[in-house]
Image (cartoon, rainbow, N blue to C red; front, side):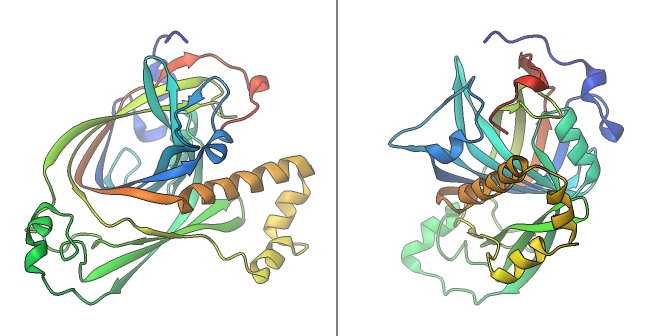
Length: 310
């Protein structure tokens, strides 16, 4: 597919975002998982080929807390379905983007072509006992991947609840094994690096075109123990509340046909499957400075051509 001209700045800017590039500052956890190829394919447009081996692709999530951005302070959870291939490059594909900012949600949908949704991020810090230092693990601790270094005095549970109109449904819970935020600035946070994270997006009802954009990142990075992810409780109580006649979620679903309801629920379940897949690497980004470039149109599409993907 030949790349076309970048989208016009007027189309790109939304509310307070202004013209690209857009700058985001804060900290983040980038966690890579082995995701089943059949799960990832549910989100990938047919125009792309999934990069896979032995039935798996590389997906995961990007959990960020921005202290400075065009939308102000907000949190973001990007669920990455997998890696797609479109010669001469391969890029990540986001299955879901959850943010606790209406402005960031609208901008993500319309300007960047992301499957953004408003959510609530509830954070709870828990004190945990600090492990005794091990002499044999000294070097690993120095470079940021030892047990002692990655066992801080506090850990944080982040409960993410997706909000749709007047309804709310728990998406997942993420238990961070590193202190958030770092309470000791003098602690070594890893080497300073520069990297580029290219991604494809679009193919949504808000932006049907297939797009490509890049995030230029400068940060301090270190390997950490993977965060533990748990799914929302499937208990009968929650299910009954959602299905109860007169409840907001029941009213929303009752106005839709059965196929649309099934599509939404399947998408939510598949996103949870991505989050619960096996983690292989977790990287903590501190002093994060991320510059998001203007997306480029890869292929023009109409809403009538939307079939699969995000």
